[in-house]
Length: 123
Image (tube, rainbow, N blue to C red; front, side, top):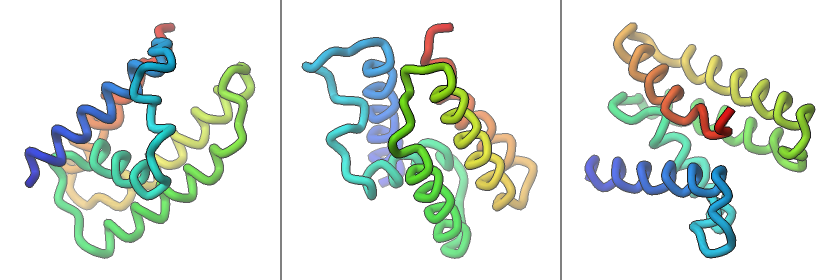
């Protein structure tokens, strides 16, 4: 089951990278065809890959991810101001999610997972 979740997370990440690189209309759509619940699950899977969360941690993390997703709605990602706002929201989300983790090993793994989603802009 974990392998399936990992594969799905990789496919979602690849789809996001393809979209960021101008994948065109024939691509996976970068999550545009996903429901909000599927986006939340994909984000949780990517960020917490290799980390075991308690039910309470999962519930709080889901709440944090949903809140950040709601805050990102309507932001124009094509402007510098929009990108800055997006980055600010994502940093806040990741800081709050990281605070949920107890062990240094889990925090290190979280940081690695979060970093794997950065750098998509080709700057």
